[in-house]
Length: 207
Image 1 (cartoon, rainbow, N blue to C red):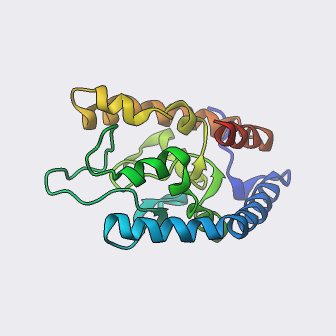
Image 2 (cartoon, helix red, strand yellow):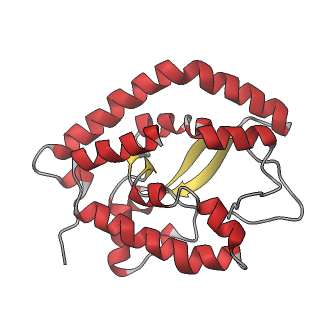
C-alpha cells in the first residue's frame, strides 16, 4: 500500500508551503472579494427571506466536525428532505441558480480556509453519514483537510445533472458517485504535490 501523505506530516517542507499558500491566498481572496460576498449575502437574504449565509456541519480533518459557510441558494421545502441536490431542484431559487453557476456561493469558504478547517484543494467536505462512515484505507481521506476544489469535484462538475437523470438520486449518489469520489481522492492523496494543487485550482477558475 502506498504511503498516505499527511499535510502536517510532510518532512520536505511541502506541508508548510501548502498551508502558507492557503493562508496567504485566502486572506487576499477575502480582501478582494469581501464586497462581493457582502452583496451576495444581502441579495440571498432577500431572496430566501432568511439569513443569506448557509451554515452546515461537515466532517473535516481527522473526523472533526466544523461549520462550512456558503451563500444560501435554496429555500426550505416540506416536500423534499434530502441533502442530495439535483438539477432542477425546486428548492434552488433563480438567484441561487446564478450564484451556483458563477461559484459565488462558494466564496465564504475562503474563511474556512483561512481558519484552517479547509484547504483550497482536497476532498469536498461531506455531511455526517458519509465521510464519518469510511472504513479501512478509505479513512485516509480524513488525514487531510477537505478542499474547495479537487480532482473529484472537477470530474463531477455536472453532478446535479447526473442525479437528475437517475431513477433514484440518493441511491445513485451513495452507490456510484460517492465510491468513485473516494477512489479519486485516495489517488490524489497518494500522488499529492503542490504543482497538482495549482493545476486543480487553475482548472476550477478557468472552467
